[in-house]
Amino acid sequence: MEDGNIAFKVTYNDANWSGVCSKKVAEYNFGNRVWCGVQSHFEENCQSACYAHPGVLNRNYSPCYDAIAQKELQFSPGYFHHGSKAGEPKQCKDAKVGKIALFTSKEQGAAEIERFIFAIGVIEVIDYNLDDNGNEEEIIRCHKDSAIQFSARFRPKYWDYYSNKKAPETIFWGSGLIRYVQDEEILSLLNRVVNSPVYNNRMKEKAKKIIEQFI
Image 1: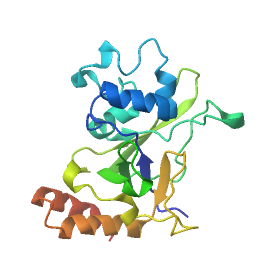
Image 2: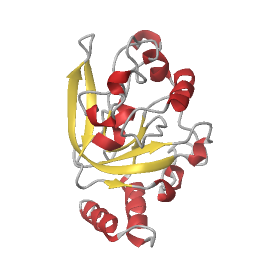
Image 3: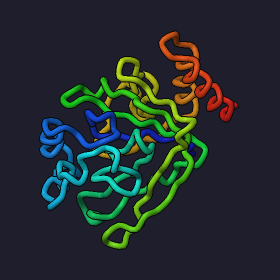
């Protein structure tokens, strides 16, 4: 059985995941990320004027979840892009309300081992939205006030706290957008926040409160 915690694979965004990418970053993503490539051909994509001001973006209005991942602390498991289920939404079947979501990313061209965590959130809602094809897309949203958000300088490395069960020595994520994370791995990360001198007291207190739910 899974513990109910998840990690999201979020496309790199140089607007701190609170706005659309710069033109340079967007062009790279258009050619190297599936969803970015798809929506780049839309009449209005992420580089269109309607999305230019970060203030207009919210959980109900954005060109992609990557552009609001830190701002709104929500994400989706994504869609199948190949095979018989192509075009159908995926689901986090073992994610649980009250458990933890890690928002992870890595800079363009960086090795997978350089993947970092930019936010830790407590899962508040697992909701469903109807997409344009009438499918129920799963949306996982975290509580904003209790979330821990890291500055670029002190982001923990994801692979310091997670390992693949079947091949612990292998640093590999693949194409899916989610990974299930064990309680002990989450606790290790939170204890690092509590005990490291680089994090401020507000972040430490948030980490302690989250730890309490695991005890």
